[in-house]
Length: 396
Image (tube, rainbow, N blue to C red; front, side, top):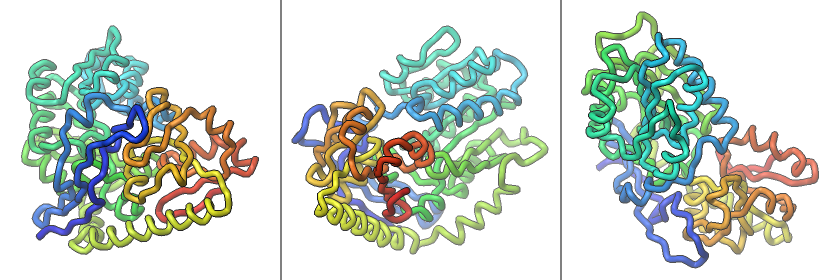
């Protein structure tokens, strides 16, 4: 039997509600590890149409991500020879990366984005967005072996058919093309204890060993890995090419893939998920105890940010509107809605500052540095953040 852990039956992380006290669909959220290849993934899936037809996360809502993708595009453009080299961004979201490529002179840009609201926000003369899930028909529309660069950022973890996805990428890539992907790493996740990134959209939680095996089945090999500690609490960028077209030098912050495999072998085993689940319970109990104590002292507690992670953390910990007054979020489409399952309203940042809360739970903890810089005025007037991971603590 594979090792497993469960958060129970929870709402979809991005299924924000228009009104309070709305009945919501819940789906079992159980993670298991394949004892053969080591891949950690969900045991059950929710309907993709419910999760991605209208997506509420916009990359451009974060200055950190805008700057990150700007540098990302600048670094990759240096490897291209012509402004008309075709670049395809799978899961292009609101086009932040494509717009950065455009800024650096690229003019043959294609996004593939199933969320119609995000796809419509991206189109311009030099950027074409295909509003659909990436599949074999997408490859035919774009052109087989036509892309010099295929990017997929925080997308591979969402894919229900990994073999199919990688196979389509391989067909899309030119012979000398490069596949570039960013994603979290299972070891970072285990070390941090951030159970809130377990949600139905995240079907897989990758180590590079199982991913490299899947790439190899379709004639692709990893040629570089770079770690970004300040992106999503730790994010990795990988580069892969077709076998036979490897560059002369390994690229990135690790000298060779074997270093990563050794770390995964040491830290990911049949006991890892059991230990993680125990840690999950301890974090939940510590956070709830902290909030109840603060509330008993008459403190005003709110949430800062309404990312998908907030839905999971609040529902798993059973923290509702009797403890938290509201969540503040800068994304207009989220404002006026309610977190499913716990009926906590989402308001604008202006409401946050008007309320002058004593404490704010930093649900968007992956942007801690940016948030602390942004809210210096509130902090100087006595406001404090509660950061849930790696264990609940108060800053500053």
